[in-house]
Length: 137
Image 1 (cartoon, rainbow, N blue to C red):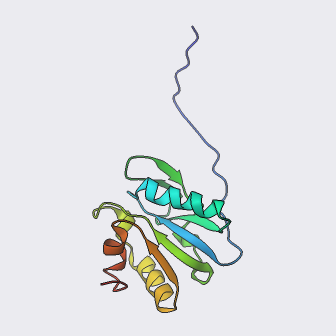
Image 2: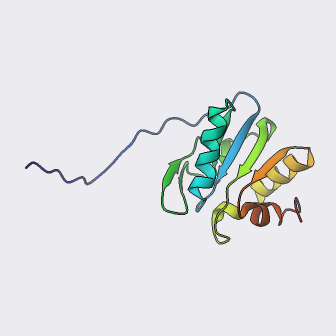
Image 3: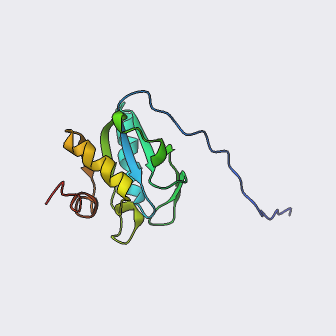
């Protein structure tokens, strides 16, 4: 029996995407709930919506709550606020980065909301993301 021990795994990650117009952006921070993020992305894409996953970190590889690593379509640095149609926040445990936005992302979310933008928040995200920003009370 020929067995091979793997010592290193590498994958080719495609280049970050650049949306051309308005789109839906699903925000993935460390510790995001995988089902609450990926299932809506799948359903929206099947419905023909232009949807992109966005890492809330500098790295496109984001670790979910149960340890699944997801390669986001882009990072938050690539996000152009003028292209946001919808912002979608999956839930996470309150200690996780996925629901603890940095100041720059807080400003993007608040400006989007104040300009009549659409935001969806799942599970704990309404209370942990939108509540502190004064979007819901």
